[in-house]
Length: 395
Ligand code: T4K
Image (cartoon, rainbow, N blue to C red; front, side, top):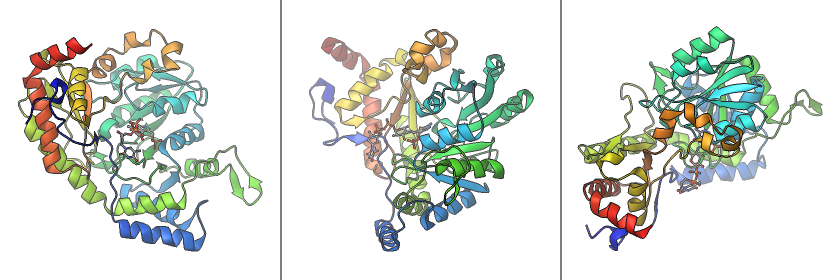
């Protein structure tokens, strides 16, 4: 290895290496499906590929209803609306901002509840204290595909007469207690964004066992149309297009291959980062079903480099590691202005957003590339005093 790029060496990678490079799957099959879409001249509005995709997701998760949408964010907005949420909803701040925005977008107050530092998910012991007469629901998130505390949240929601929804954008194909994520709460929401383990370019879905809820969500997805000329509900346009479903189906067919690549990458990182001072790779429960789609480390600054310093060292090498979900939803607008003091009750989130770094994985990463990235992390931590001095000199 040459001198670190931050000290003037040649970057380890000639081109940027991204977190979230899409998995593609069988191109010929995708093109064939796209041909079919064009030949049928049925491009969107509840087309045959969308139906096939919905059935495949339902079967995979063992959940009776899947309503495919144009993206995960709109699916969240529709799920929230179909659940009749209003007033206040309890939600973690350590998530992609779409989770909070989907509430705020419809004038519902997100009430941020701190997370458990071991799981990065909602801390169920802190939820009840935040329930007020205005609270109508809890929106849990399965961060990194690791399950939110579904049993505890289910009990709390039942005890207080609240609706329970889950943002399962990271959790396609993950299970808890042997039960697939997708079947918990009133409904769960999936994302098939380009960066997700299974993608439909852009896409999302609501999955639910509640038939009445599914019927309402389906109406809302298509402007409330119950039939030609008959609008039975307020609605929006949340439809998934046929070309998105073509990609979604193709991607789903290669899911096992994608998951195997993620797992291989994870295990390579795990072996290479073993014993590196100040770096802890977050764990997954291998007794459960898991998609291994995020490789996330926690960086302990006392070992030499802060997370931000390590990120700067990696970016100089063209490794674009991401500090998801910095700085936490509560520190983003409009929440920062609306709730200026909320950080005081979120000490674990505040700590976590300074420590977490997501590393590149997925089918675009070869084992050699993963080994090289892990090697850069290990070297940076070993060489911390010199790198830190150089970084401070450039500020
Ligand atoms: N809830 C949760 C918990 C979520 O994580 C998300 C989305 C949602 C809800 C909302 O679901 P969607 O409405 O998105 O379906 C990315 C994704 O855009 C976002 O979908 C995802 N979570 C989030 C965790 O990651 P950014 O802001 O990091 O995106 P961006 O453009 O920086 O892309 C990430 C990296 O991926 C880039 O470094 C480049 C690479 N990339 C990206 C795209 C789109 C590619 O190589 N090719 C591509 O086509 O949010």
